[in-house]
Image (tube, rainbow, N blue to C red; front, side):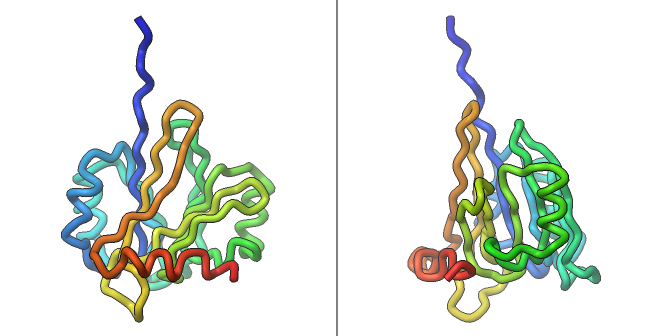
Amino acid sequence: MTRMAKILRIGIISDTHGVVHPRVPELFARMDHLIHAGDVGGAHVLRQLEALAPLTYVDGNNDDATGEDIVRFTVGGLRILLTHILPRPHKPALRVLQSLGDAPADVVIFGHSHLPHHEVVDGVTYFNPASSGPRRFNYPVSVGMIEKNGRDWKAMHVALDERSVGALEKFMNQMSR
């Protein structure tokens, strides 16, 4: 009898600014791990997320921090570098480049810009889920998810409202344009 590998699911959220969108608990209910990429906006947000799954987070520049901290961790064999301010995938901050030089990562997760991003640069996936907090400009309101099945993994964005479906496509990867 062949044993089926369990699919690992990771929920990614950023820039909540004190607000947990009503769809987040439903979308993250079956996640194995959650990641918050900064600008949390209060301990109440962390408590709501921790009630859903184990949580790893980094403070953002609106969390009485610089937004430049780096947290390194591994979930299900996926090596993750988490920071709030990158600033751009093709020109990451020196602290990010040094950390990647010290130890490779499969994915760099970041926030701050409120812009969705999903791009591979020099063999590393750079992923920003965009903001899931209060709407800013015409940017999408969304979260991200990573699904890992064995060695294969994929990241995706999920719009939190109908308007954000088109906005995800419109604003995707603008940080590399």
